[in-house]
Length: 225
Image (cartoon, rainbow, N blue to C red):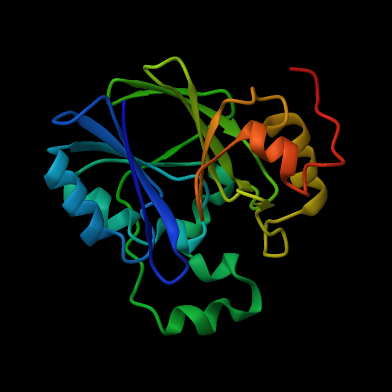
């Protein structure tokens, strides 16, 4: 499997590309602010053909370029229905400062074809089986994407649910701290230690590393696997 990633925009949100290998179809995960130039470079270098855009949640730093990318490649965007409104009204997800923030940004272009993600879905895209797990807490429609690797390992695209040493904030509209703790207990901690976590911001980590050292996970008792 080919896994590419780069941070984009002022908030350095990670955008990822997943494919079976060079010269193949690919999915693009979370093309946020200022992602298109670096994304196009990766597509050219690895001769990749996008077939879908997948969104871990609806915050603008993760979806800002989704409409542009979808329209350029004539592909759909997939997002959980609870966060779908953010694709056309991003300011609503940012609280009182949202209108002021977006007044200074270029207009957001919404994808033309938007499809709903559901808990337990398995998307068969670009030769990959991509599992969808609803993970509310950071937003009401946050999801995790799980993908098996050729080498027998497991990748988790965690969005802003889990970072290396931290978790996503829960103080914006749609966020809820107690819901986040439930998600961490029931959706994150049951995963095997060698699961590689590709977070929405910051460096790659593993479930085992976070289980051992992430202060937000220390006092949580995992649900049964």
